[in-house]
Amino acid sequence: MLYHITLHLARSKQFPEGSPRYGYEITAPLDAEGHLDQEEWAGKRAYCRVRRFWGDEGERNGVLVRRPGGAGGATWVIDYNQDRAGDEEAGYHLHQHRFAVGEYVTIQDDDEKPHTFQVVSVNRAEPAKAEEHR
Image (cartoon, rainbow, N blue to C red):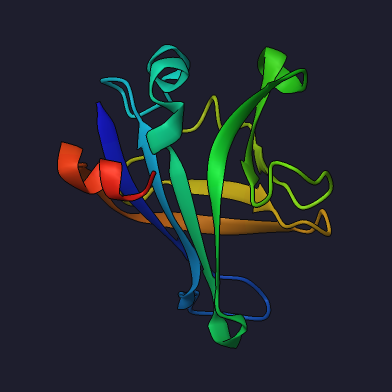
């Protein structure tokens, strides 16, 4: 089943309280434990969209992609332009992390700098809403 997941920047040296101005909105399939569901993803790839919002920089839109290789046999990345290499942001062990409110995940920006985010919401995606992101 597809879910809308919202991540906000967690506490860091630069942002001691974290920041809701920096983060991601992800539409992705999750299993019963809240992990990314790679089997369901394979059948619903077109619906697995990502919106990155980053302070005053505006937003970027991309897709959630599972690539072979990396820890655990695969790496989940956010790809902003599938026709061009080098703009991807890799998740750090996203196959192991639970997407549940209060949990933390790490995503490397396209400069390979890791940022930690807190899951602030996880809601079932309505089919019509998921199709809007195609």
